[in-house]
Length: 483
Ligand code: URQ
Ligand code: ZN
Ligand code: ZN
Image (cartoon, rainbow, N blue to C red; front, side, top):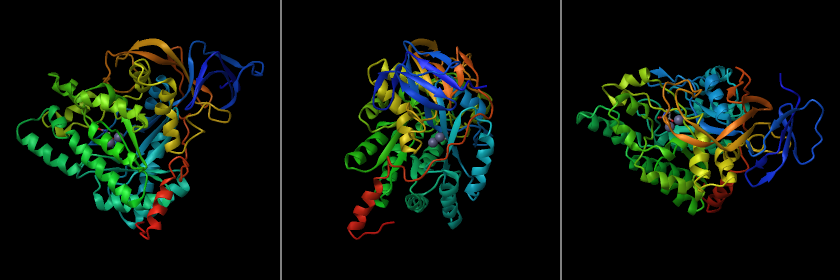
């Protein structure tokens, strides 16, 4: 039962543009007032934020709850995954509807909507374009007009599965532009990966180290640049997910320095874990870290942090895609069969605070931008989400900058039997998490309810990214209609 009124007292509110001392009054699901000497109705529940920050609930723009993939299904479902996120301060996710090639996008969308009914916190969906036809084009329009989808994903990797070629990229990017939606890509050259995997395997390398060897950073850099150039010619904004390396970041940085509208996402995992994990003599430990793009040489991490600091990487995510050890063992004799994915939704914000704010790389305002507000703006959920202001959803976190914990699969809430941050001590944790005004995490205990999460419909033509139309009219001004 949610007390109608709650008052968060004594905290320092942090938003995308400032930090200031203020109390926050919540009425039902919404923020009712932010300031001092607030008029608080009798009976309001008091939440003490003294010594803490009050920040917008984290938004993870990249998760795969209960994803059917590589012959199995991810072990984390929408309830356990959004609950684990709440324990770490994340209150919204953007997951992915991934139709099989030839499958109706609307049918797949309905499937995922059904699975997500059990969510504990709010959720939205990117929809993947995994094949092309007039039907796909029409259904994309229906998803934008009638179902609140404003972002479409394109996998440039995973040949013979969900990978699309340049022909589909061009057709889909053109359609996405018409619809005022945002194109996103998984940027790895899937053909090159396929050929390198064969060569590595045929040389007798069958273990998880073969996964990293067959997807060097150049493979990611090529695809990132190719997607960027296609988007440039077509005049569409572009969002590149899970940038893991210098090469893709350089492509984004060049494009942005020339005024092209490109956004970059980075996973908390890629900022702190490096490729040495694949040399672990324990096969299971190495296999736990098989994900794409793979973990890189440690030198890429500083480049990624600079990407955030320099404004060329805008959001942080986790690509939370869990496969337990027995599932990973499908690839015991062939690394190509190890289901790709790692967990991370519970620890993203603590890892970023510990390695970002406490090291001086980021300010609290920048932390809020990359964990919540930027994502809300890019995917057009702002200021309903990603903001501490009157009228916004009361998705809030009382964040204790000094509390410490040691990350472990023994204590985490994720439904997976390992943790890629195992043993890492982090400072900076969620003390209280509220989802639309309901306390879902407090005193180290989850208080989530299955099905309490709501679908977040998102409109097209997001004001924060709509400038691309100006650019395309520039092209049109040259008498070139490339749409
Ligand atoms: O590629 C993705 O984003 C999905 C299939 C999760 N797996 C992964 O390795 N990143
Ligand atoms: Zn991906
Ligand atoms: Zn993913």
